[in-house]
Length: 141
Image (cartoon, rainbow, N blue to C red; front, side, top):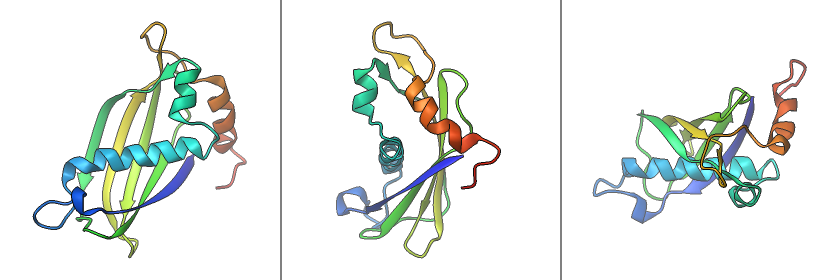
C-alpha cells in the first residue's frame, strides 16, 4: 500500500450558506490528493501526458460522515491499496479535520488511456517501478 497526506485550508468559496463544504467540492479535494500523491513519487499529470498517458476518472463513490467547515485545515489521505495489474487504478481517499476526525471517505477509479489511440493501456512502467516496493511482503509502512 502507498499513501500520501495533503493538507488544504477550506476557502470561503468552497462552502455553502450553512458554512460547510459544499458536497461537490470533494471531487476537487480528491483530485488535489491524487495530484500530490503522484508528485510524491516523482511524477505529475503533466509528465504522464507528455509520455502519452491520460487518466480520466470513470467512477467515484463518496460517503459523507461529518461536515468540513470554512477555514478548517483538512487532511486528504490518498491511498493506493492494490498495485494496478492493467489499465485501472483505484484510489481511496479519507478526509480528516484538525481534530483528526474522519469527515468523508471516497473511492475514485481512473483508467490509464493512450493519448495517441484513445484506448485503455497499462500503467506506465516507470510509475509501476516506483510503486512496486510498497507492495512487497517485506515492505514496512
